[in-house]
Length: 200
Image (tube, rainbow, N blue to C red; front, side):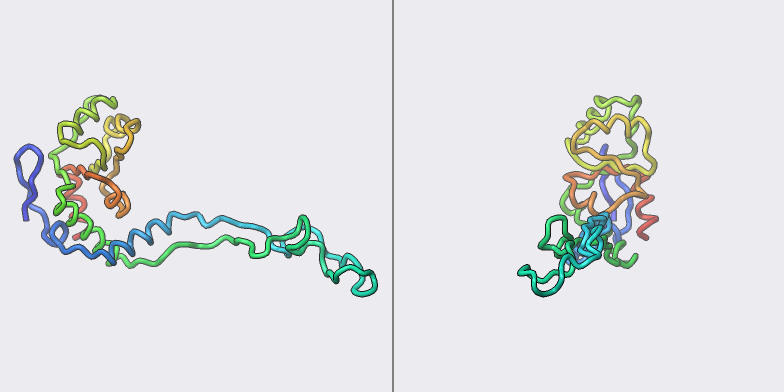
């Protein structure tokens, strides 16, 4: 299949990558797994065994009139442990490489169907200025979105850092969340070729 390049030219791309059906359950699973993998899972609280002290029975079992107690570090006591203490955990979910790549193909195909994918021959930014990047994107009709290049140009990266809702990624760092959550995706011809080589 052919995709139009900004400027009037066309580019031959793989039908299996940019023209496949959209599978919402698959994309949802991969996006959730990707987000879950980014969670640190370091939340931790101390339970009664982790709190310092409380090794001795505070008073004898019977005869004092107090409620029986075996430690001063129970959840009901001041400076005691937390009842259901949070512990460090791993939130990551297993996703096969085949599933991940299939989801990426489905997302790219949907971007093409919704006219949210803009392909350009190249993005040459002459100087690391925000204005230069804004001008280049405005010429493409893009005010917010994701810019993908085969290798990130220093001028493009530095010039885009101060623009809200515009992110720059290298083709080999592309992920499903970035593609799904953006309004427009601008890809250079070299980036498309690199993505095709990866997802082939």
